[in-house]
Image 1 (tube, rainbow, N blue to C red):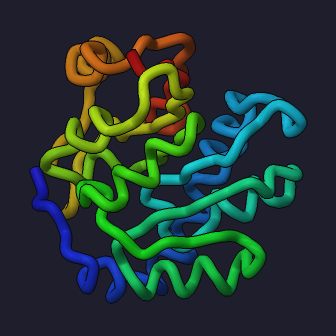
Image 2 (cartoon, one colour; image 1 turned 120 degrees about the vertical axis):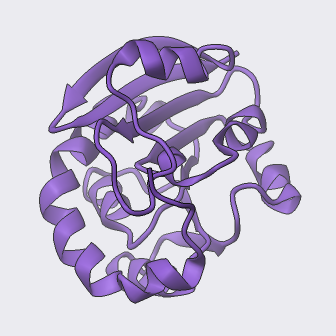
Image 3 (spheres, rainbow, N blue to C red; image 1 turned 90 degrees about the vertical axis):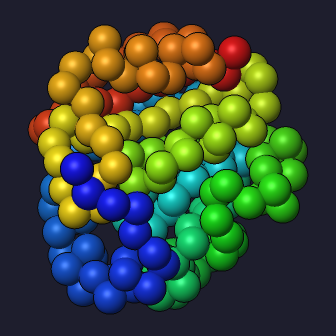
Length: 183
């Protein structure tokens, strides 16, 4: 198992992240969009751990422009702002109480390939408002900054089931994508 990374460690990986993410995760991003309400019924999407903004770009290309992306790595956010300058981005740690106050104003959350990097991932999930739509993905493989990974859906439901009502799930290239409602 890996360790929880620091913002500056992710900032150093920016070149590698940018080229690899687009290729590897594009199918995941397109599938995640399918779990969202239609544009006319969709509130602001809170993208937790938005990274370099590839998912943001997919959202905006599909017409989803009510969006706030949050990440704790300054260089990743700068890259995201270049990729989608019209989007709103916030520099912040997902476990910070001030960030949790922002959560309370919204009902749609995407958390794609983020929770496996955070030791106290359940703190993030617990602070999402009840009744919210939560679309998240976690990996089936280990990596340098993964503090956990999941071999199957039973393990995912075992960890997140007390907080989330699973509505739909699928596996995409070694990643598990789930659509849930916060209990």
